[in-house]
Image (cartoon, rainbow, N blue to C red; front, side, top):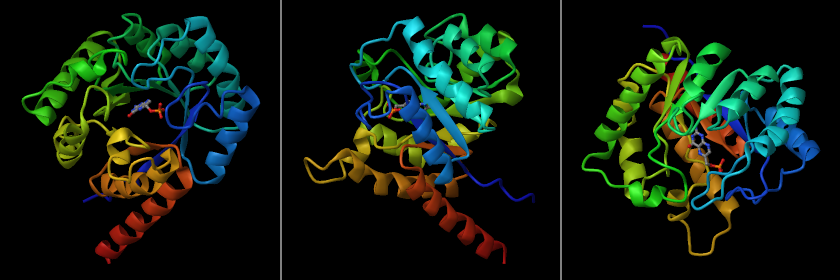
Length: 272
Ligand code: PMM
């Protein structure tokens, strides 16, 4: 049997003033570039550059402003040979980002937020992350109603894959993501993680984005700072890697890199 490829580390570069997890520290373009380079030095394989926060209740950003935030950062980092993904729900931003050198479009809405996204993604030739999504952040908490969360997320992702492929997206370029925290409550995230193989059974690489999310914060003492979620995030990265995740999307790359090194050594030991 071929050995599974090691899980990749996708480092988050938020070029936003309001991301829930890093408080907009990387809003300035130069600071975002420097942060991206630091994440690569810490072991990121891919950088995910986003200009619009998806935190619960976050306001939408104007399309032109989103492009203004991400394109210079992508151009500089891609120009240095770093694989870049663009975290956007908008076709125009995806198109500008790919033109600037992005090789992955990370669309948290899987094409639902912008009907132009699928054809643009298809024409771009980039890889495409389709995340499970039910609605924008201002109303997603009300959409977290499931009878069987893992089955419904898998079925809704399968529907998105069909729609994307019908719109011309090459199936070989699709990556799926269960969308932890997006229209999911704490226990629903845990059930999805425990049943990650059901998402994997669709036959696409799986990306897991748990980094610093509320359901990890809930394991910590009240009032713990958001950075305290990095150790739980790294442990979760290791567990996701052991379950065959294609990549994990994280803010603290160093901790996850070390955790994944442990997984790789463990797996090598199993092979003997
Ligand atoms: N989570 C956030 C943003 N983008 N993209 C994917 N594919 N998966 C995720 O889970 C995901 C994402 C929200 O987190 P942030 O505001 O800290 O970046």
